Amino acid sequence: MAKPTIIIVSAAMHSSAHYDALTHAFNSMGYSVVCDRLPSLDPEEGTSPTVAEDVEHLRRTSVLPELERGREVIVMGHSYGGCVGPAAAKGLSSSERLADGKKGGVVGIVNMSAAIVAGGTSLLSIFPGGKIPAGLVANKASGTFMVENTKGYYKGVSPAASDEAASRLRPHALSIFKTPVPAGAWADAAFDGRRAYIKTMADEAVGPEAQQAMLAARGVAWRVLELADAGHFPNMTHGDQVARFVDELAMEWTGVKG
Image (cartoon, rainbow, N blue to C red; front, side, top):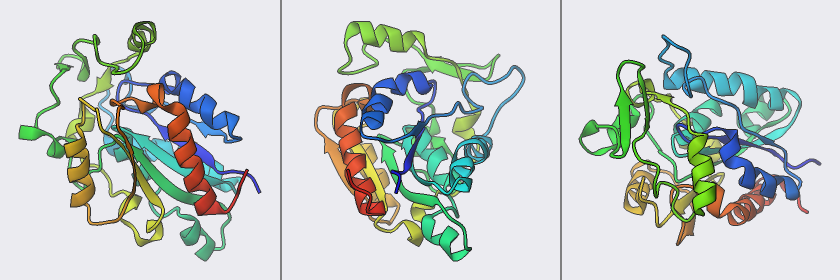
């Protein structure tokens, strides 16, 4: 039996290239990885893609194609991706699909230094004062935002790698902060024992206290991995450790070993 496909849902302003190290770690363990570009990343001129549009895009272009091939999937949301990935998995758990006589399914959800937002509320609801986080600058003319100063943005990343990562950043639609986040599958009983969170304890973007507050507020149990020295981008600094954790989860959730 094949190992599940890992679907990585990237952070705002970031693309699949920022997950190369983590993808390599997964590939070396025998996992296939999908990391699609969301419509809200570097949006087409004159558009303001919503969170719901990102969710529908991910579901249609990444999740469902894997399931229709009979594959099992782990959805892994990073930062903003934690709003999108779990919502795209709604109703698509392995148990729900099996009940409908269908093969394949989402076997688990992993959020990494990610936003966990109650369905129907906005991403702004988790930030103090309902304002976009400090360090991000809005361009109202284009309806996008970017990092104001990339120096020190990638904590724990070498200067050369940090510069390369910063050069790959792209504007992101402001609309993701204000539009409602669809309900995430993490809230469903189908994912009891199948939801995990990677908490970054040296995170200066979404601090560990904020991460813990979100976990506590959602009223469901998560299996938590704490990375003591990780900033907001463990995909760049702790790829092997993250991959090993997900591999352990995958073995538990699917029974596929080695």
